[in-house]
Amino acid sequence: MHRRGVGAGAIAKKKLAEARYKERGNVLAEDQIVQMSKQLETFKSNLEEFASKHKQEIRKNSQFRVQFQEMCATIGVDPLASGKGFWSEMLGVGDFYYELGVQIIEVCLALKHRNGGLITLDELHQRVLKGRGKYAQDVSQDDLMRAIKKLKVMGSGFGMIPVGGSYLVQSVPAELNMDHTVVLQLAEKKGFVTVSEIKDSLKWEKERACHVLDHLLKEGLAWLDSQAAEEAQYWLPALFSELTSRDVTPEEANQMTP
Amino acid sequence: MDRFSWSNGLLEINETLVIQQRGVRLYDGDDKAKLDVGVALLSTHRLIWRDNWCHSMPLSQILLFEEQAAGIGKSAKIVIHLQATPANKEPGPYQHSKYSFIKLSFKEHGQIEFYRRLTEEMTRKRWENTPASQPIPIGTGSQAGRTRAVGIVGIERKIEEKRKETDKNISEAFEDLSKLMVKAKEMVELSRSIANKIKDKQFGLRSYLLSMGIADPVTRETHGSGTHYHMQLAKQLDDMLQAPLEERGGMMALTEVYCLVNRARGMELLSPEDLVNACKMFESLKLPLRLRVFDSGVMVVQLQSHSEEEMIASALDNVSDKGSLTAEEFAKLLGLSVLLSKERLLLAEKMGHLCRDDSVEGLRFYPNLF
Figure 1 (cartoon, one colour):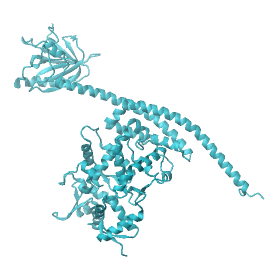
Figure 2 (cartoon, chains in turn red, blue; figure 1 turned 135 degrees about the horizontal axis):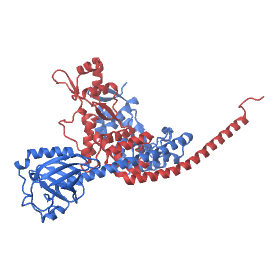
Figure 3 (cartoon, one colour; figure 1 turned 90 degrees about the vertical axis):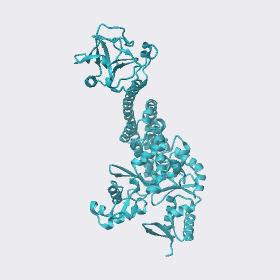
Figure 4 (cartoon, chains in turn purple, red; figure 1 turned 180 degrees about the vertical axis):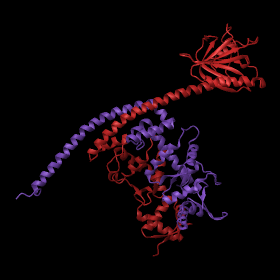
């Protein structure tokens, strides 16, 4: 009787067919890999030529950096993926952004005790610039945002929350869902918010508002002023930089335990 | 043109610059002056012209002036009729001239505004109210004019030159960038087509993808995007982190490691991805370090020797000892970061050894007596 597919013979045949297929697959790939290596070498020299002429532009000109990044994104390339990448090695883009990453982390760490791990992009920008000194290359907010995107991969809780036309940068793994975000956005104008304001603007019930505010308090992102005139006010230190507490310098930040 | 005197290009006290326009050629009457195209400047007191050298005349010399429209192949001009030369006039580019008018030819436009401002200044006659001090003759007249223009005017010129150069550089850079990207795109498409065909990625192919910055479609969980480079990195990290880890109770947040390592390196820095990929290889390389991800998403590097049981036991001990602890208090006690001490307490809680009291005053942990 001929049953299809069973029996040692059939199995052996199948294995052979698989092996042949694999072999063929590999041989095919090998040709292409050779071709690829050649093209790679050509591309590398193109990149070297570009670098020798324009490396300075990338370092000095933030507009140019934006263009460069966007073009890379369009073709599906992440020039910041690895310090070992061509882009990094030859154009030096990597070092610029990775160092910026270090500076961002340090600023956020230094201020965490005060703002709970939430800071406006503006304030972050100012402090990073200050820390870099007046002879360092200029850094734009676009540069900061790209560096922050990279930091996310280290699970540090880095993220950006759109608020009032700009962003709040989060640097702790506090869970902030849509409700929290919306309240932050509401608080942006004055730096604080009350339960009544939330109820009026967002049409929430008192419980929901209190739940969100409690969470922000617990995470250290909000401070409670229960002695305010009419109603308790929930202040967000991230949203104002004229706090009376003393400014923390990057040197002190280095000494602080994260 | 014999009304001009050599100038050192500096504005006097009380003299203010009103407008400047580049691309201006001077005419001695109807004849082109034997000078190149330069910059015409109008101040509250003088009409100044400069190129490699600089000369000026007081506005009081101007009798009247009129516009001359542009024609075919001819730039727009302002014709300026002048008073007779004063006796004490300093030497200038022309000893004498048969004409008593000059023309400013605006090869790069700007004549409308210049004319307007000249009209204004000639009406206001500000030089009469705030007499500028007499120009100090520097050396002999002709030498003063021929030295390269310094002072405000010279600085302005430098800025202008730099701006032109920068503009040129930028547009060239953008052009070259576009060409480069076209080539890069070809590379990406080629590598994508290959990457999709082969399932078993050899190290070689992977490092190629890494160099190009192309996302590797193969799942990263199993091998990470490990390449030879990352293997070496992993070993370097092992060397570098032993001491710091011991100091910090056996555990460091990945962001902390990132800062530590990159500050030490100074250049050729690691990308965040490089660091993560290297750490993922600790186990397979049998190095005494581990990358660990907490439920919260926080990633740490910890010493293999610091076992989980030990950490939990010590957390329980400390909490029992003090009755209860918050993350901040625990951090102070152990000399750890608040972030990591919180993770330890959470871990102990997860294992059922601690329980929490969550209030607006903070998160406090107690030994679990249930």
